[in-house]
Image (cartoon, rainbow, N blue to C red; front, top):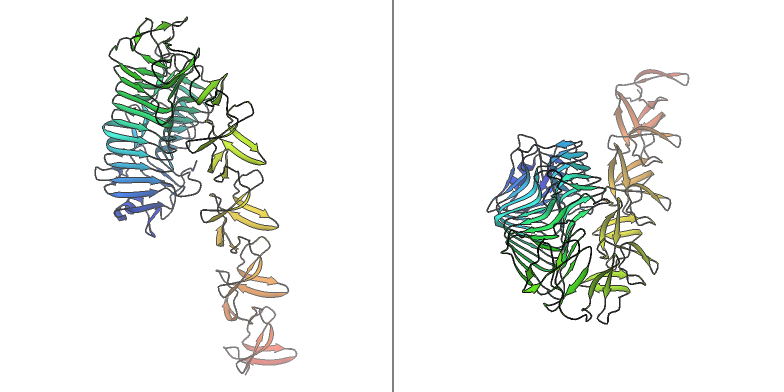
Amino acid sequence: MVEPEETVSNVAEVNGTSYKTLTEAFAAAKQNGTVKLLANVTLGAEDAAIEVAEKLTLDLNNFALVGSGKTVFHVAEAGDLTVQDNSTAKKGYIAGIYTDNDLTMKADSLVETIRVDGALAVESGSIYGAVATGTVTNPNAIAVSALTGTVTVNGGEIWGVRAANTASEGNLNAIRVNSDATLNLTGNAVIGAAKVDTNAQDADYIALKNDGTAVIDGKAVVYGIHAGAKVSTAKVGTMNVGMNVIDSTKSLSIGSEASVLAAVGTDLEDAEIRAIAARGDLTLEGGVVKGNSKFGAIVLTNAHFVARESENVVPVVENQKGSAVAFAKNYPDATYEITGGIFKTPAASEQFTDLNDVVAFGYTTEKGNWNDETWTQSEDGDYLKVVKGSDEPVKAGWVEVEGSWKYRNEDGSYHTGWLRLNDSWFYMDENGVMQTGWQQLNGNWFYMDENGYMLTGWQHLGGNWFYMDENGYMLTGWQYLGGNWFYMNESGYMLTGWQQLNGNWFYFDESGYMLTGWQQLNGNWFYFDESGYMLTGWQQLNGNWFYFDESGYMLTGWQQLNGNWFYMDESGHMLTGWQYLNNNWFYMNESGHMQTGWLYLGGNWFYMNESGHMVTGWNYIDGTWYNFNASGHML
């Protein structure tokens, strides 16, 4: 993550003009204009929210924009803001508040990073409610609050909080959608309540609070909590009531290859997280919904629930602890239209394509009915299921076998090798098991994410950047990408900083770009030719001679080289001709050599002493007295 630094003189540019404050830059931007960050920006407590009242784009450019605990942007009703990061690394972000330490938030002081009354589109980069390098206690933040209008997230990440740890419950959302607002979550977008490096303790958060209309599609992912270690949820007394990833009261639909995941962590035993709590319309036309709750992955109260296959994509609902779909017995008005789906619980896994096969799993302490069919209660009373029809093989699709995912062909066999589905590639080993992580196949390295998708393009894995081409091959060596040269070592890592390759020195900036031309690094000037080689020795550049020592530093001032003295001015130019330096006149010939002894120039004799100084007045030279006027001419 990019850490905020002290603000430099100019923080943003619009159409090539730089501005000292972000407010000035946005004021200067016109309709359809782009404001590009040039540095990390930290807003002060006295700074008001930046008002966006027309169609504008913010390019984070791999920098951080941090608020002081107040709203950073307000997108007015007529406003239309697009947030993107056009850098290669795409690590730029906006945060409502940042601290390089622990952060304790106040219950009566809600941080809203972006408030939307118009239109907001997120293409790349990240938006956070709060960021801390330590522990966030009582997180009370919303990354994006849609009051009215439309929020569209096609890429990038949005999190309520990003920290090392979180402690205790709080009022925390990645996105909040009010009754008159609409959310479209698609592409490769990722949102979540909390992303923490280690533990999330006593969590009670909501990634998406939807009181309006929300559509989750594409390969978008909604996380409850993404933790590096343990996740535990809040309790009331001794009862672990847990939290919801999505709380929806109006209209929510999920399709394509989207995912709603309760939690990621190494220890989820004390985590009680429902994927979706619905009190309005809920439609599943694909996607994967995974809960980690004894109350149900999906909990319905007075909701209308639809699950159906769409374009050969079957929705999957899975729970690690209890029922897949549950309805609260105190709210009997829930209605259902289930014509396709896979519903999984710890005790069983069934698939159906119409009402003649498996219908669903539910949770209640009493027997009930589902589409006029009789429920049977499990032995432990945790869920109910209805099974009708025959044992005929189901159609082709994903199935989970003994904890591993496999793809079943129409003939009932399991697919092996490469598999292409909906323009995405997967790889199954000789046993048909879907592979994840690094895979070496036919001499090439590939990376499959946790859902099995073969990744392409730039990928940040294990703290290093890699590039996979359109075929998924991990690239190594020199690569020309997006108009810039990069170098990936034999392990595929994108290199940065100083690198010696094939006997030549190169410099790659923090985004991995190979630098050329003049570069000031750590207070010293260097020159890299068009091939990126760091130059040393004498170099003629733009009609001037410079000298770079063996470390590549551009030299200035007096320099003795190969037995001759030269003088380079503060810009590194080698000087020639008459030069007045330190109150003395010197003469450098056309090769830049400082002259000594007798010198005949312009019809006059001069004498330069052993230090190169032009002498004046009476001087005793080689046993004879000579007189020189003020201009150094011998009389």
